[in-house]
Image 1: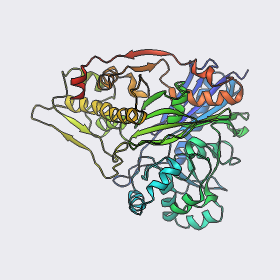
Image 2 (image 1 turned 180 degrees about the vertical axis):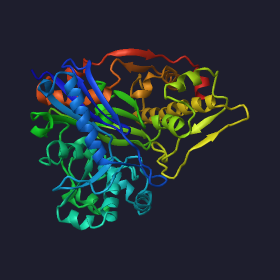
Image 3 (image 1 turned 30 degrees about the vertical axis):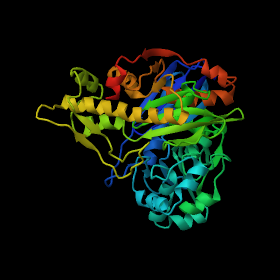
Image 4 (image 1 turned 135 degrees about the vertical axis):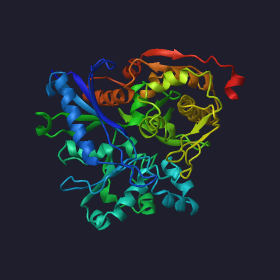
Length: 479
């Protein structure tokens, strides 16, 4: 009997599949494959789109096998690293270049020029986004201009350009469906935030032909069926959202005012703002939260480019720790950071600064500074950046935030969670299911496949594992 939901979670550092029970909070099977990062030039970050596809297929098959086969799977939900952009041949499905990752800064000169020409206010009014190489539009244009013959082929309708969700659904359907969802579309700088359509003026501004773009659909609904040869039977794909919006859904944060932060490769603060786009006066982004059951919800978001990747840098590049988990024990052994601070601007600074040219720094070093001080500074940098975002969000809302729901791999670090609560002066709430992003994709798939009746039912599923209450005096926290 098909009674389970598979969530395909394609992230920046790995691809995984998680199978959930219909009750929505017990993972039944997980399969995961790490993803290689490519850095061809300083500030450039790329992924192999074919590697992503092969990994997606493998983890889905492994997870299905673990629960008894594809006949157990009622539906598939997809969530993905946002803004990362692929260009591929519409007829063969072959990528024409490695995918340009959301962290990539190669188009900074383009977005800076558009900003200098005075286009940012209009772009932000239409899309909710600032002008920055983070978003997909300038990446698409770069691919069309730097892959030989690509622009002419795109104009002729021979090419597809899309985010990772569109790439995976094209491959999973054997090329039958070229679709995305409104949350991913809203991260391109080409999609109207209020009317939810591709905007001709933005396409002209960024020099992107409409013919390369996918159809944008609601986050909960039928996107297509998998090819019958992939898993032995066609399986409907009925949910899709970008990773941060999926995490919001996974938290059951489905009413205006709910707020969460995901600590992944980057860190992303998202606050549900209701049925109309909100305008930030503190350099946060307005974005689509989800579209389901005929309802469109919006959110404000702050994006940090380097969170978990800072610990990854300590481990893989600097060799300061053997495993990411070591950072907590090393840092815990110190009474404080010893005056050492790390600014992890490896790929620039995101919200609320939006400085593509900023670079990393370690300050406050003395002869007594050790790798433990740098490890602690790395963890604290995640919390300091997050506090910047929460403060900006509170100022936009003109109200104190009641608590902060958290997810992502770093929430297993109790030291970081307690320091975050101490800085903010509000409880940090860790859920029982830390695979919140995958859970949100499963929820969306379950909504349109009949497993769940409505959004209220999803909100009731969320369960707390631990609350970290602030213990630091506010004067010390401010200092």
